[in-house]
Image (cartoon, rainbow, N blue to C red; front, side, top):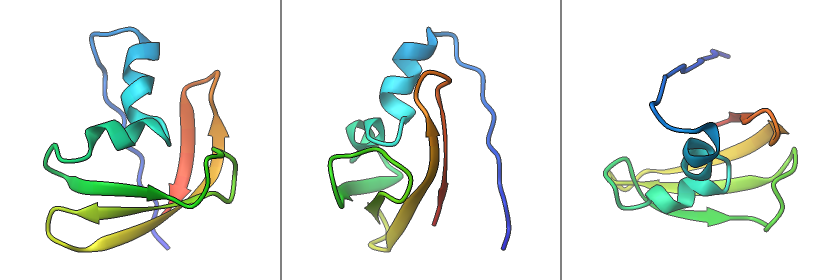
Amino acid sequence: MGQARVVRRFDAPAERVWALLSWRGMARLAGEGLFEAVRFESEESVAGATKWLQLASGLVLRERLEWIDEPGFGYGYRI
């Protein structure tokens, strides 16, 4: 199994960036090029939660939330 870590700097407050990149916030980016739709298994953002992303190519990915640190603006997931 491989691992990846993406680190980017944004010229915006962390709360504003988190609103778009958090586990649930990513749904706001649907249709912006990378993926077309997001479907969540449940409303909770807890370890073990899953969501499905339909990519622009038509491929569907299932992601599983491994850990989340809302106050620290971080989370990890598996595809």
